[in-house]
Length: 98
Image (cartoon, rainbow, N blue to C red; front, side, top):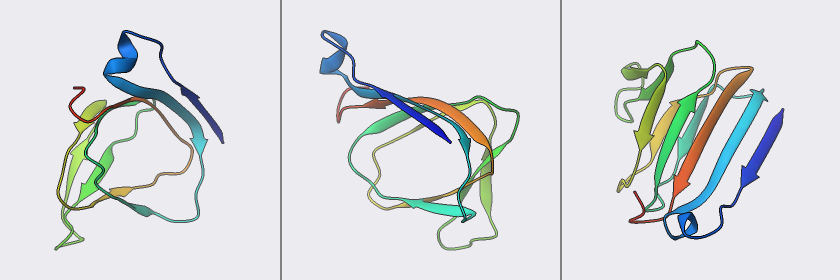
């Protein structure tokens, strides 16, 4: 797996905490809980797979995302899928930065 992170200089650093990229993600689990932190994230899928956002109360229900999505300020965690050999790039915005 490859993970890279870039912290931008000003003036972009007033809005963006970091840019990130991972390629070849290979984890032993199939779902992951993402905790709220007050920030927003732009996520771009670099492969052809469709990604899932699961309903916390009904794990068999989910929404599907294909190319890109914005994930953001929430009051509770979300549950996402973890697919083998995934590749994504994204922008982690500061709270209020988007």
